[in-house]
Length: 300
Image (cartoon, rainbow, N blue to C red):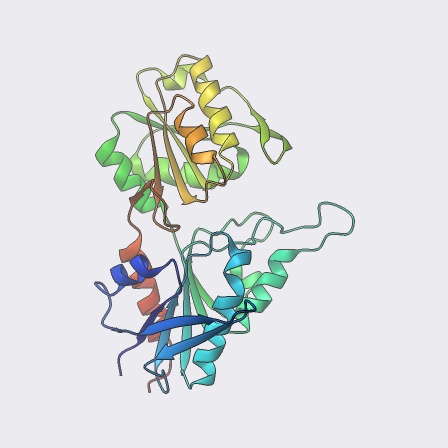
């Protein structure tokens, strides 16, 4: 029996793209909203005895998480034999330690909730820092799809004489991988954060930039202030206008407009979060990973 493909609200385009890569049946997932704000998922056809692929875009996760949890739980109640969550952007990874008195490690609590309603999940480049692997916090099978190969292919096709620039220390893992795949040099700046929207970064080595197009690469761009600060430092040393690439284009508030107005040549992102900047398609890699997660399921 073919897997049933379901899209949470906001992920319809990604799910439609999935259907071109997987032999599955597109189901209908609707969320009835009661007058008091409660929601009730409805899944048709009912998934009894079938594997379910549930695709969701989890930017602004607090607005979407309960509906995702309820949809997965209802699929289980209706007899789904295996539930695979396809979450190209996996939120709640930044709070991977206690930074202030009275806080907790919310990454672990979020992982426990998602693990309780599915059998496996597929995502793209979660923000792993102090947590080194999803297996440390998720109790279900998972596969991480790397964005670096697709980003590198885009750079090779679109950018002449690139040099990869990581805007802060945490971006080094992406900058190094992309540079190795492109076959070009890279450098990583250092950052001091003074608040959610105030950062300062170091200057890059000017000799590395001569005759090259700087490509700023980071996993998550939310306020864009780190990218903006890095672009400013590149301008200070006389570099050409940078190309800015984000794996996950969150762009809170006016962040996208601020970055576009910061003297950059182009802003492009992977399609893990629906956004106007999407230009790097990870659908084939995500679909292949989802297929592997489905293959791990017992036969119907």
